[in-house]
Image (cartoon, rainbow, N blue to C red; front, side):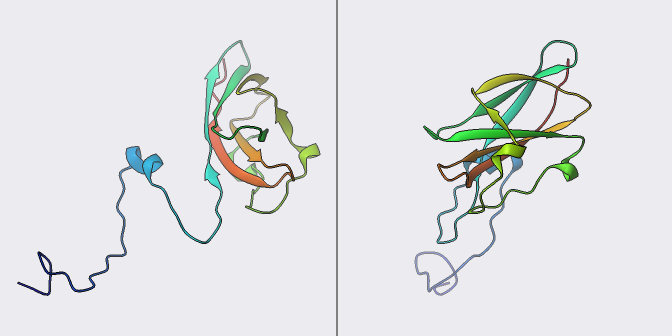
Amino acid sequence: PPGVSGWLVEGRIIYDCFVLNEKAGAVYYHGSQAVLKNLIVGTAATATGKTTINVLSTMEGAKRYYKLAADAAALPEVTYGTAITTSSWTELTAASVEVSGGGNTVVRVVEVDSESKPIAVGDAVLNIG
């Protein structure tokens, strides 16, 4: 009937958003609050005890840094607008870099602007050869 749904809609507002896991990367948020973008990070086993970190990024000119850790809880927090201490991170000089696992199981990659403030972050489980 008119007034509920159909051809006549009277200010109906729906606040929920249900997204399947496979489609979560296609959701875009446009609002006034600045947030970190999702950085797509993957790893591939290479030589014994080594892995390759692969990063898919569309930001030209942005620097990327990574940090390895034994588990996800040990990874450093990254906050939008708060500069990281680049000396405690390792610079990712290319989109694909081979590293030694050294007993670590996860990696966090952060993309920063010219002031070392994070603009995107992504995590991945290490696949060690």
